[in-house]
Length: 434
Length: 86
Figure (cartoon, rainbow over the protein chains, first blue to last red):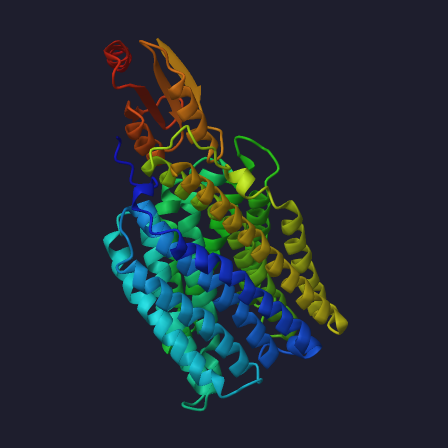
């Protein structure tokens, strides 16, 4: 066997339920975000501080993105690097429960439905993310020689900043501390570029070549891009918090260059796919990379003074593109592959351990989840409607919220279907054991 | 005698399924040479359990080449050694 630092180690996988539970629950919280947007309507898009917008956005970013990403780290870190997250069986449930319930409490609290729940959200998210970051950082430190392990470590370090600032802001909403809205941009930058961006980057080094059958990422990209992005964020934050505008500009332009280069590299790799068959995952990642390119161009234009990113329409367009166009697109595309793949692989392991190889037939990945082209179309339509809603407001905001709810609800049904078929096959394996 | 299988352009889980089917199909004195772009860790465990031996080396056309033969077939083993010496 060749020691391949970049290869997947499937014998180190945690139990299937650890990531799967989070992957199935997360779209339901995303759907709740769509329902919230639809229920609040045009007021949610009136300005960036609109309570309804903050509630809906956090149901998607915390409830969907973060819940899936935490599940992915618990799964991918041990598989890719051979280093499990310490105490996965205990860390998984505490983290998932804290994030899921915390996202709901946060949305109800800052959304104005039940303001007293802001504090509950702060505590739940603080505990859930606190437990996760300590365990994941310990695992990532041991895996620091692997490019994906390093990017994950930097991403989790970013999550410490995101969660710390987020809980601090939430405590402000709860009235326990002074609400420091001036820190929101720092929270936002570390969330989008650090936590989401660096993790997607690290995971993509493995899953893009593997599932989309592309060439591997250039070594220089794998080795240096995540660290450069992280350094750019630190420099920008230092400039933003008082060290001066030159540092802030240098830092943010570094971040822009890193993510621009990453998006272009990924699109180029996708254009060199070996088998150019239609594939919803590839389409979702293309949409994600396209959205990322537009979003970083907006930041660059704002830094150069060509665009006022603080104004409401540009800031909402940026948020929609970064969160829904980039984050949600790539993570949905990843789920299309990872969930049936993990299910299939665990069934293979069951067959092997029961000495039934060749004697039991199970579904393959495509039978566990046929390519979900319709769902990807619904997702792209939801993104389009959100962008239209930013411009036209009015009833369009309610329609866009509905489209977001359909997107996530449909995804939940698709993933539940995979779990159902997995259980059917597992039962037939057990039946053949007698 | 060599049987060649190129799975380097296939999506998961086809490489594993085709590799297993081809291994089961090996006749006396035959070995399987799988061209792969990743190292197939899940395949190893299943091959071990099914009585196959395997060896992975860096490939020329693809990143990895996996040689598979029946553990009970010394002639196939010699053929693999010969192929790897070349």
